[in-house]
Image (cartoon, rainbow, N blue to C red; front, side, top):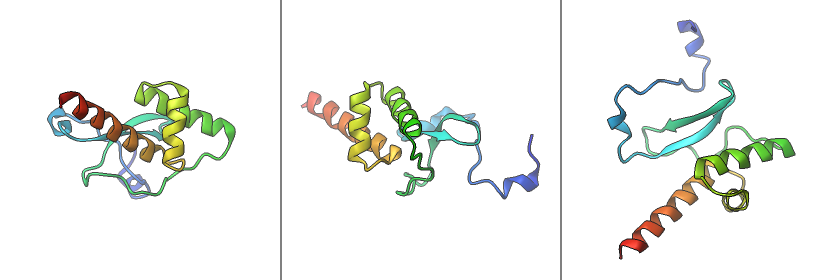
Length: 112
């Protein structure tokens, strides 16, 4: 448990969702939480995250971890994850957003 004093020093809080209905028609972003050292689904109530990446992993090992995370999140192969990461200039959130746009476009094309 953390004290109330520690809340002010945090960038964000992880809060369990009791009512999953708030997630309907919302976009969750899968991010690596450095403090929890695991991937978490993040719902931004204002609609989208800021455009600047919060933590850049410059090493090869860090890049590999980002690609593996994207691959698992998008359910694609490594090459596809690398493509979307390069299209978004190395921003994992941007890569997921571009992938989501492409998936939605493909669904719309099937319906027409």
